[in-house]
Amino acid sequence: MDKTALRAALLHQLESDLALQTAAALTSRDEATSEESKAENKYDMRAQEAAYLGPRAGGTEFSVGDRRILVVTPASPLGRQLLGRRRGDTVTLPGAKRPLAIASVA
Image (cartoon, rainbow, N blue to C red; front, side, top):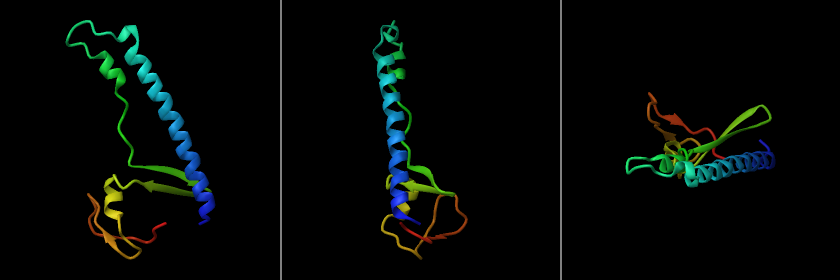
């Protein structure tokens, strides 16, 4: 696989994700600080709910040509299993019935 095309596609995907997350964070901030989100009593949680932004992802998926690529982060369960491994090593993932052999690491 052409590493230059892979890097370009990954960078494009990350830039798109950043733009989406930035817009979500700005919207969340605006909602959390708006006059309509002001607490009416001590149990009113509207501002905190509006300030909450969804969970972190464990990686990024994108396409290069007809191939689907998954880049995992070291914080994800799969990423933790793959740290320090090489081609031919085996890993056992949660829910897997048997160890899986690593075919390629890029």
